[in-house]
Image: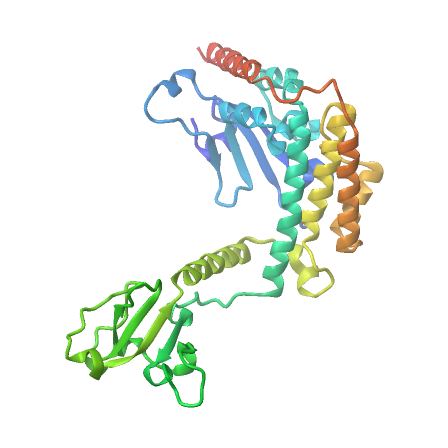
Length: 365
């Protein structure tokens, strides 16, 4: 009933809605655009009475296809989520499947139009700006395929460098520069010094400093304290863990990205992600439309569409796009619409959810 395959095949009685979203809905698709599928499915009310929560989202590995439960949709609508709000205003040519329950939700769609929905559109736009710059760093600073190793985050103060003659004392040296092999040493914790350890050389008889990604501290015999002591080790474990996360994020992005999308940045034509900045302007214009027309823009046309496609093609400098974004944001701040409620009426949204669910359950009986 809730498998992705049955929903896509329109075989599931739970299916309430399916549409083509993303650039195909916005009117900004190019020959290289992916196709995004979005949909809604129903869950019986009794499913929420058990200890195990029912599924709220079904998606493929890349989230190109996403189906939300009706309850999750109403929950996100009550929070003024722009990506879900657009499902209630989809162009007819993008709708692949609908139901009486979806029509009922659409009939009440203005329940979810509020000043909060304007603010979430603006907030999502700002997140796209940050994303555009952040992913530009990935383009200009590619990561090696091999993940970072712990030893790259180790620095040593050799014994003879603690108080060297005619040199500054206690200057840590990168392990890679020193050339020591930490498998030949034992470590013991340096008291009152986070990430600090004493190193003792045991050569071939050593068990090594790192074991299963952790420093294994040893109890050093008193008679070895002076004879085997080699220096101080400082291991920046937090920096190593962050580097691992950054490496994983970078290579996930590399595997999943649309290569055509990044061509302009990698050839040096642009210093930003043009698609993300197009979505910045799209969200801002859509938010402004909520203030002026009482509903978001999904399908763009005319001058607005030409503007979005010019941004997408990289015909503006980054500062020019920022000026556009600030101008639209300023217009939104100046435009007050007293007819819009401050927030979504949560009680009314809850009542609508129950009514739609009850209608679907009656239709299934």
